[in-house]
Image 1 (cartoon, each protein chain N blue to C red):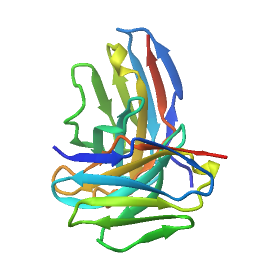
Image 2 (image 1 turned 180 degrees about the horizontal axis):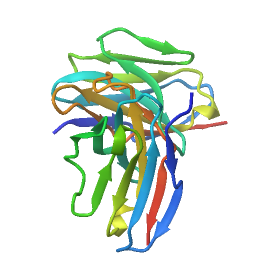
Image 3 (image 1 turned 90 degrees about the vertical axis):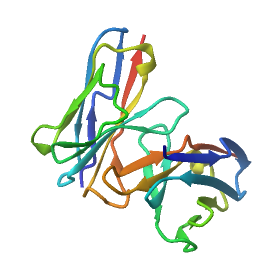
Image 4 (image 1 turned 60 degrees about the vertical axis):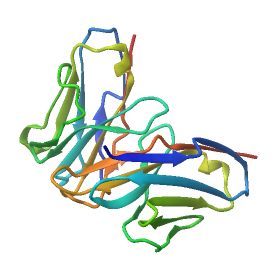
Length: 115
Length: 112
């Protein structure tokens, strides 16, 4: 079974530039998550989709971050304009249902460095 | 606000030692507690615990949940260098805003 796919794996940009990350979840998984993991910290949920609807985006900095999940499958996360503190790994994850008991599967992550 | 606290933050042991990692949580509408292992890439799932006092075991790893005292432990016996990683604990809550909240992790280093 194919896992969660993410791209690009690594990205270096200057502050105030924009960047977009792409995620393809495990086939059949209705719920998709974007997490931000800053070095030395645990992952923090940015946004959660159920099919193509947003379930939770309470911790998404909406002035600069946006995310969409068209057709309930792939998702993109965009940062515009980027700040130095956005340097982190952006993890996409998916799960089978809305309330899976918590078992979610992570992609390899997209490592962002803002200089 | 949901909170998950792990201790110790980091740990260095010799191969063959037994280690215990701790996780405490304060989560509204708690449903389950999860452990993940992270080695320089995405976290990989280890255990999900929903009931108190029932130990889950996988090889040299085991974990148990205490829902009264709001904590969980992860034990690793006969540690190997391949166990070196960050171990993440996460608490899952249900409701209209179901969410998985992670702790900061325990960094384990196993030396020869």
